[in-house]
Image 1 (cartoon, rainbow, N blue to C red):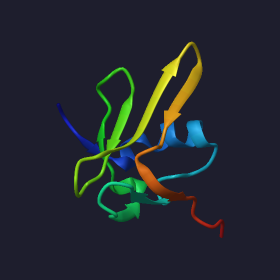
Image 2: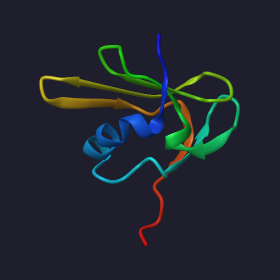
Image 3: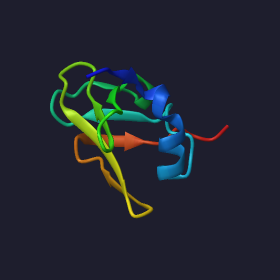
Image 4: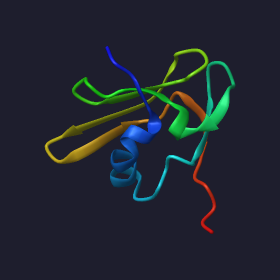
Length: 86
């Protein structure tokens, strides 16, 4: 399956979270690696979007749309912080 980086789902993230999220910083709950969502390894060819840690491949983010409702799982993150608005 082909992977892209988190920038490829910038529109999905904006629609889901209501803000620009590619610069949001997340920490992997499994390995502790931190970085912006733009650096996620993303699998977008499935029925939804799966974002994995670039370091350990743990699943950090899953977004699936069902009947017009976005279902979001961010349980793979120990922390997820939206960047401060400038």
